[in-house]
Amino acid sequence: MKHLTVLFCLFILSLGVQSQLLTPQTMMYPTSNGDSLEVDVYLPNNTGSFPVILIQTPYGKFSFRNGMPLGIRRNLSTSNYAFVILDWRGRFANLSKFDASVTTGEDGYDLVEWIATQTWSTGKIGTWGPSALGNVQFETAKKQPPHLTCAVPQVCSPQFFYNDYYAGGSARVAYLEQLDGLGFGVSSTVIAHPYYDFLWSAAEASTVYPDSIKIPMLLTGGWYDHNTDGMLFQFDTCTKNSILPTGTKHHLLMGPWVHGGSGAAYVGSAIQGQLTYNNAEGISDSVALEFFDYHLRSINNGWDSKPAVMYYQMGDDQWLEDSEWPVSYTTPTNYYLHGDGSLKTTQSTTDSLSFSYNPNNPSPTIGGATLSTSLDQGPYDQVPLVESRSDLITFETSTLTQDLKVKGKIGVNFYISSDKKDTDVAIRVTDVYPDGRSMLLMDGIQRMRFRNGYRVSDTAFMIPGTVYPVSIAIPNTAITFKAGHKLRIVVTSSNYPMYNRNMNNGGVMYPGSNLDSVLNPQTSTNTIHVGATYSSHLVLPVDNTNTSISEIDLFKVEVFPNPSNDVINIKSEEIVNQVTVFSLSGKQLFRTNQNTNQINLTGFKSGIYFLVIETKKGTLTKKIIKK
Image 1 (cartoon, rainbow, N blue to C red):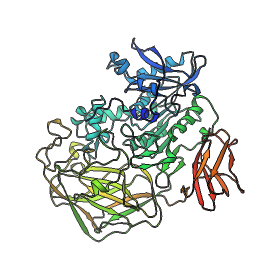
Image 2 (tube, rainbow, N blue to C red):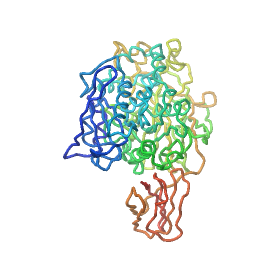
Image 3 (cartoon, rainbow, N blue to C red):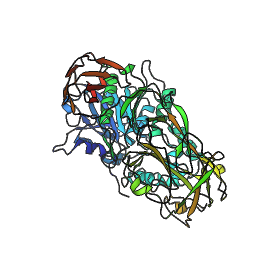
């Protein structure tokens, strides 16, 4: 597998080719174990003092010489913040300082407190970064350095859970191989513990510590990320158990984003897989700056009054706000599998459908919540390479006559039999477009020997021909299946190389401690049962409320400057009859009752709004940002 030297290269690619690198001040800071570590310091100028954004990376601090994050890039002189970049101990510039007895959290504590003593620092320090750069923020916050003020961890999950490495009991092959390629070297330990045991119990206990988090955090995740549920878990536990100063709280931002690390997609980009979300571009940066401005610069920008959750409703392509996740106003709605391949809210008559699975010819991974640089990430059409095969069954709704809004976690409850002692049940959920594209939203898998649990004592092989109930975990989402679309599920017994191939023989799962060895494989015939006795079904968390703001490009409109401090100009090829401004939650804030080509934002708080422009030809919505 291709070795990815810098997972964070996705950020660097977003900066574009630079003709000249930024030149930081390289400094050494003392650590509590008696040595010192090298950091790069980027200052807007050499005379002022600034709040500081600290980034701790295992992938090489030199990468940031191409530009700063949060939209600052090479315009450092216009930044309100100084940046300090640290290579982890034992990595890159600090390679020679490896010491297994010192944690990244301890080094982070020392660095935060050193920054606070510098003349160029105001003493207010925040942290930022995705993936591993996000996990280290939790480790630093756990140590509670007095001058650490806030943090923005992105697409990360610091907790070490069994299901993060064994999805439904099946090893996440591509993920573990990529972690090894990045130098984390965890696969040998993981593969030695394929059942939930003392190691997993101890690891979970030591990596879940919300009561130690005493600073406000903006947790940023993606609906196409492999850490979606991990990010939501962290938000939930921190919200319930963190001890925060009065008047502060954690916030959650969930966008239509992948994890990043391969391809053009990353947190905050418009392009995600084969889809484009223009009104999600740059939002992670602008919201993070609002958060930092409030906590690090004490700007009264209304952040303290914002709802705790901001999320993107895919399909409707709109941002919404709420006080919690999951939202409280969904209705669990059963969609039953029918023998004719349909999905309906009514039960079917008794029936069964079978499909085959050959471990030597598994169903391929095409997009999805991947990490490997050898795989595509995000929403990809499943028709050409997955649904064109014969080793699957699909179930789908009829063409929708009205929007179907789903917000939360979809339940998957099947009844399965097989002619072998063990097999896997894999599911992909897709949004089928009117043109026939079947765009992947999420997936899940369950190894049947683990249908009752993941401890050795829980496992049980199948008796051929016996029907067993099984639930398959898939991550949270927020998606509106639009009128004219269909909801489809694809049922197979593999999704490779995302997940380990089940050999169907009931033997040792990883012979020779190999993540992906195939020894004495057997082809299985697996059957899914439907009907009154075996009511295989999905449970959709359906939102029947009417909160949407549509955006349909019926005519050309430009709004500028955007972002703006005061005035937004509107240039439209159609005469503008009326303009309305909405908050992210859909609340109407302002409306003109006459022709206008300009909106004054002077009285608005800094933040993101929707501008709804009405003409004779139709209505169009544009996202605007007030600085």
